[in-house]
Length: 118
Image 1 (cartoon, rainbow, N blue to C red):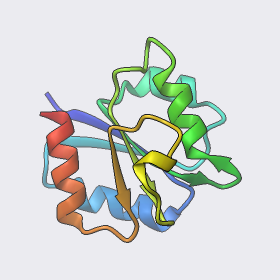
Image 2 (cartoon, rainbow, N blue to C red; image 1 turned 90 degrees about the vertical axis):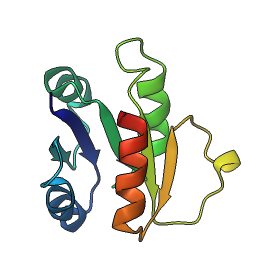
Image 3 (cartoon, helix red, strand yellow; image 1 turned 30 degrees about the vertical axis):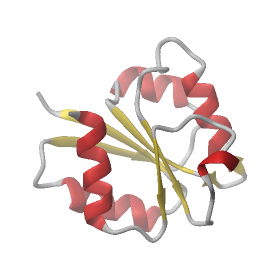
Image 4 (cartoon, one colour; image 1 turned 120 degrees about the vertical axis):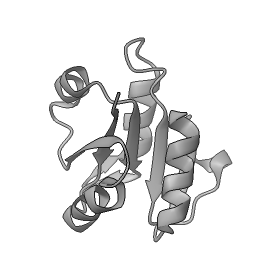
């Protein structure tokens, strides 16, 4: 069965690159730039993993991470926090399953994704 990855990022260029990265793997990818319907999107898409930018416009991805991790329906979905700024795991103030620093190597993204989904 295809694993589902939800990418949440306000960078449209990155959301266009993600499908190319995952196209030859058994993953179904959905990218969104707006989290106004996050509960509906997650409920409808049922992701196995979430790639979450630390800044989605004016919204702090760490708050979104905490929101998802605090709800029973989404608490067990692995979250990879993606940051364009250097952050330390102790300074994140949320509980992602992994952190990737932009720009990241494709191999690192695939490695983290495979580790969290298998």
